[in-house]
Structure formats: C-alpha cells, structure tokens
Amino acid sequence: MKKAVVLVLDGVGIGEMPDAADYGDSGSDTLGNTARAVGGLNLPNLQNMGLGNIHPISGIEPVNSPIASWGKLSEMSKGKDSTTGHWEMMGLVSSVAMPTFPSGFPTAFIDEFSLACGHVILGNEVASGTEIIQRLGEEQIDTEGLIVYTSADSVFQIAAHESAVSVDELYRCCEIARRMLVPPDLGVSRVIARPFIGEAGRYTRTAHRKDFSVSPPGETLLDKLAEKGIAVTGVGKIDDLFNHRSITTEHTANNSQGMNLLLEKIRISAGGFIFANFCDFDSKWGHRNDYKGFAQGLVDVDCWIPKLLRSLNREDLLIITADHGNDPTTPSTDHSREFVPLLVYSPGFSGLSLGTRSTFSDIACTLTEFFQAGGNFPGRSFLKEVQHDIQ
Image (cartoon, rainbow, N blue to C red):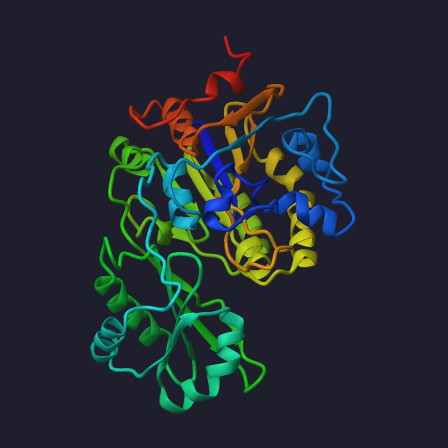
C-alpha cells in the first residue's frame, strides 16, 4: 500500500509573512538570516529538491530542474505556535489566536493552581527557560516548588529539578494545570513539563520534556484517517500537539533519533500516513538564538536526505515543511510569523513550482485526495500538480 510522509522541521521558517509586524516579527527570515549569519549554507540535497528556488538563501542557488516540487505555505490561522501550525496542516484553521500572558498569569489562578497541586509556585513571568532555572533553581530545590514561566507564545511551562520533584509528579502537576487552563480566557496552547538536573549554576534541561496540549476544537485529517481505518504513525512530539487524539507517536530526544526512527517507521510500514517532527531547530537552537547550531542542524538533515528519498517507493509521497519560524539571529527568542517551505517529492516525477499557497491546510487537502479519505478542509490540493505525469 502507498504511504505519505510529512516531515516538519520545527521552526524552520522562510521569510516574514505580510502581517509579521502585527506579531513583532518584522525582518524575521529563519533560513535566510541564518544563512547570512554563517556566511552561506551548503545544503546540496535540499538544494537539489528546490529549496533555493523558493526564496533567496545565501549559498543555496536555484536549480534548473529540482527533483521535488517547491513552494511556500502561508499560515491562515491567527498565531505562530506549534499547535496552531500542526493543526492547520491537518485542516483545522484557528480563527482566534490562543491567549498569551506577557505579564504572567493572574495571581488568583496561580494561587488556585498552587493549592490544587500542593506546591509553592515560583517565577510566574515571561522568561527564557534556560535562564530562569539558573536563577531560581536553588530555591526550587529547597522549597520543592514549581517554577512557572511563559513566553511570547501561548504556553504555561513548569520546571523542576528531578531530585526535588519527580518527573511523574511534574507530569501530574501539568495535567492539573491543563484541566484548569480552559478556553477562552486561559486556554493556552500547551502546558509543558520542563524537568532539569545538575548543580547550582550548571543546571541543564533533560529529555523528559512533555507537552500537554489543548484538544483540537474541530475535525482534523487525523480523525478522518482514523475513521477510514488508514494507519497513522507519529515520530516526535506530534501526538502531544493533538492531545493524543487519532494518533500515537514514539517520542525522540533529538533530531538524530528522529532521523533513525523515521527511516525505521517507513521501512516497516505497510502503508498509511507517517507524521514526523524534528524539534531541535526550535527547542535547542531557535529559542536560544544559536544560529551556528541551527546551521549545523540543517547540514545534518541535508546529509541524511538521500537515505530518506531512497526509502520511498514510486507511489509514495513526501512533504517537507515547517510549522512556524524561529529566527535565531533576531533579539527575540520566540517563534516568528513566517512563511514555511514546501518541498514535495514523489519518486519518478519531476518537480515544478507550487507557488505561494494560501494555507498550511493545502497539505490536508492533498493527503485527503491521496488517501481518498473524503475530508472537506480549507485550501486546495496540490497532488495532481506534483504527480503530473500519472495517467
């Protein structure tokens, strides 16, 4: 049976959208600015797929005959969050941005949450996750409390040292917060567990991060595929973003694990949909303004791309894209409102320009047609354009 693979390079945007200024993101260009910052990128395999045909990127020139079809996707939803972006890819457009808390969460809510979970709450501010654990880590250990912080994104993050608050206890507290943070006023996109380890001044976050997302308020392509009995497999944090509805995923600690696991899932697949997220671009490099790490991560993925392409059969479909931007060269350490790249590969078919698409949901429309799943989502399928030689 045929299979479709969607690979999300988390945070790898490709230039500011027209409304970027509304989000404080004027000038953001994750790929373009990263390339300029390192004196040009060398990504020959992604270049051969058409990455340089989408947008000017130093070191990645356009090619005459890309092996993949190329374009970029506009986000129709309000916001620039991972949850919003992935939902829209699966056909659910969010007309109202999820709430953010630039002054921290209401004191009355924090008091109620403290009582419900049984821990002292520290922080309750907008902060960098790596900075706040250095500043409040000792107090957190001494009190066995919880460090609560947020960002410009719609998140409620809870950090605790694993020696003071066990990972299971931290997850329990996150589940309590998730139940309490209800739409519309407090309906944050994600509650995120952020356990850390180490000594004072040298605390580091662990791989036990876990996201607790709000449930999708409408039907997604994942729901339609489940109704049709079409296999759905996830790699990375995908299931967290859909609150585990209609998808189960195997989580990974880093991009390297994600690459190995995705190839294994493709190898053993008897057909269906494989949905993968490589999160290091966002969590390790974008949020920390590490443009050198970001660039090296792109090189690592590019070196792996030939293995991915060789794993596909003639009737299979591969889509490489992103969920938002996270420009590591700007003063902001948060997500950025950007177009995202669209590279679509089907073995045996030459590439062509797909232009600028009006919504991420074009992916859902394409996969609906690919699997004949019968969904009715915003946007327009590009399947016939990609597989233009099929008779």
